[in-house]
Structures are given as structure tokens and as C-alpha cells.
Length: 116
Image: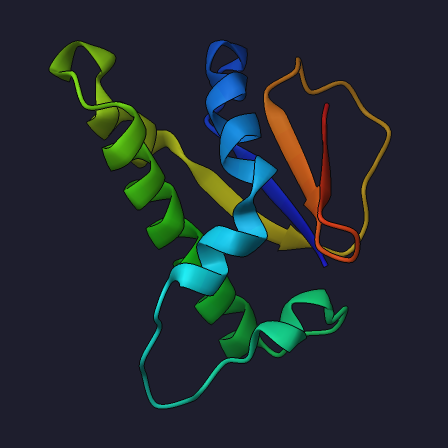
């Protein structure tokens, strides 16, 4: 699975890189309770049904909000802006295209990321 994350501004890519550095541990620590149980072993799964994808995206957004709350505590840092502009998606493939250094791609199979 490839997770695409951005705030649509390359000035804030460092925050996403730091977030991606230990994303797998952030997701492990987050307790998600709903109608279904989601096992972390599915994190490296390549094919998802819509409901699984939705659950993973919600988990990542929740982790992002918690990360921002812990990291950007001063109002001058504008933590709400980080939360509102964060976009995340699960994609099937990565394309070689210019993205102005605004996008972080996280590869779950080896817990690595690249900035594009």
C-alpha cells in the first residue's frame, strides 16, 4: 500500500516527513473501535475494499491530528491550518511527476517514504 500525504505547500513538508518517520507506530498506538476489527497485519495489503480504505484513511487523519496537537502547541504555529489542509489517500502506483516537494509517499511494505 502506498499512502500519499500533503498539505499542498512545500513549506510544511518537513512536518509530514516527521509524521511519516514512525507512522506505523502511531497507527499501532491508536485504538480504533467500530463495527469491525482492523488488524495491523493488513497494513501491507495491496488490495482494499472501500470500507477498509476508508477506515485506514480515518486512522491516518486521526494520527495526524494527534501529531499536530503534540508538535505545534503554540497558537502562532497555526495547528488548525495543518489539520484542515492535510490530504491523504491510498494509491496503487506512484507516477514520476513534478509535485514541488509538497507530497510525501509512504510505502507500508518497508516503512519508508519519499518526498516528491
